[in-house]
Image 1 (cartoon, helix red, strand yellow):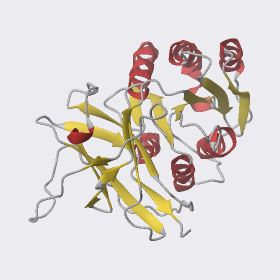
Image 2: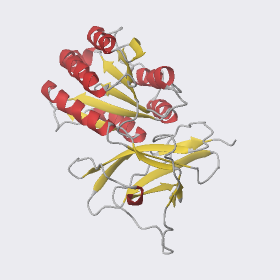
Image 3: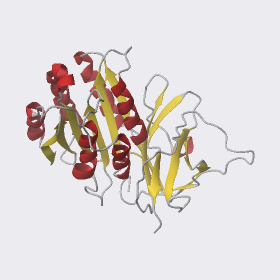
Image 4: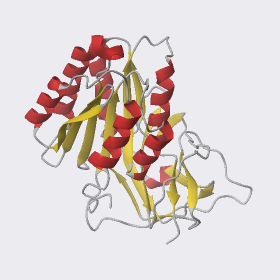
Length: 311
């Protein structure tokens, strides 16, 4: 459960006006996706970040500033509301080492090592390193040993021709991160450096999104190209980030990689979490929406729903 032991509390929201639910700024709502997450959900747990129209993260929100809607109906009771900047971190670094990105790979590796050095703050934080080309490979399983992580990033190289982005991220969610330390609440995130193209995966993008949502993993995608361009792979990366409550970042040059990584680190460390009982026990997809009461325009990064099964 988020927060320190003994600090969980129930929080009541005021009832909505009889005239309907007013619109608030910063709403995010997804259409029903084509994949299924089969899981009994005794309590819904949701992490999110909020930024203003200039991208500045809002750090001082309270429970009274937000409203959660499940299937468009307001959640009336929160079990917990907390800011999660000090949660233990479980982090995955996934490097695209295929031919299409190899020119910038040395700079990407250098920036990734600096990011790991900053992002892992204590022995409680752990990370793993994967790379993919025509297949994927785990170069370092989850550890708090920085030297091993740095070495893994440095040594990662292309394991066969092709690109299996979807298979790599799916495996990271299912095999490296899922259900790890499930008795303690931790912030789970994956950072993918890729151009977003996939040529040979057995898994499809909806499978990857489902795996990340099932394991409560936020995916942050980082790609390298000029800002005015919109390569086809950006669509994959954007959707992966949006559906999991992560973020999508574009660096225009290798020099900008470090600032993009810094933004990712800041967003990961400026999170809010809420947990609440499901409003409806009906099995299937339940859309989630976070609204923020604010005089300014804001953007919410949050997971867009969950699937539940009958008990």
